[in-house]
Image 1 (cartoon, rainbow, N blue to C red):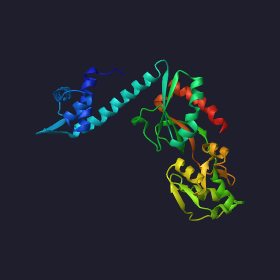
Image 2: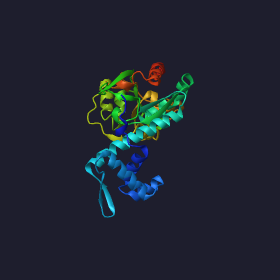
Image 3: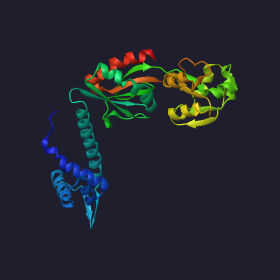
Image 4: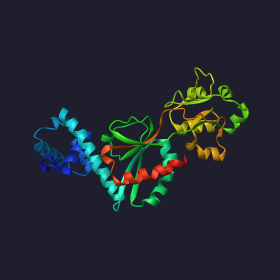
Length: 298
């Protein structure tokens, strides 16, 4: 679709407006942009002339956005952010393409980031940019090409592909394992249990899968995988953790599995998700082909 140039103010006018709107002060905006206060004022007047309406209410020595100006400022700020991100991505990979991928924090740090070099060796022309997003989001509001999502396959307005289930295992420090001498799944009820806020019923489901009656389980809460993993390492309690995310701790003996996992306790799984309009984007197509193989061994 061709852009109507009459609806495209210059970047210099928009940058001046965005800064002035953010600070609600022309002088502060001028200092940020290394301009004079009168230059900012001229830019705002010129933009208002193009729009045919005022953006600011001017009262004595102060200015404040009009109601329409507030809406326009939010949209212009997002548009400038998109332009900046696109420019940064192009500069990072001028001969190929960039691929902006949202990942869960622990998954990104423990699994995805260490495998970026392997992808880069196969596709040196593509630059992957990783952005952590702990909760679902709207693709329309983000400059992202895809996301790796854990949950149910119900991301509205997007396409997705199943990647893998995760196998969670009860793990604790060597000292705790030696002290409690766990032999059966029911023995775990004798130890303090650690809970992840995002999966509050994980222990109940694990015990149910092992035919153990466990009602009203209490214990310490953690809001991040990294925190609960460190708490388990320190001996604060038993944690249910995805085996593939604690492989290093298990190998080094910092954590010990103390009972068998339960097969696919949850309906949730890992999915690669992308906006419908990015389905044919070449870096995404390449990444989809690569990650299918990468997750096959997990």
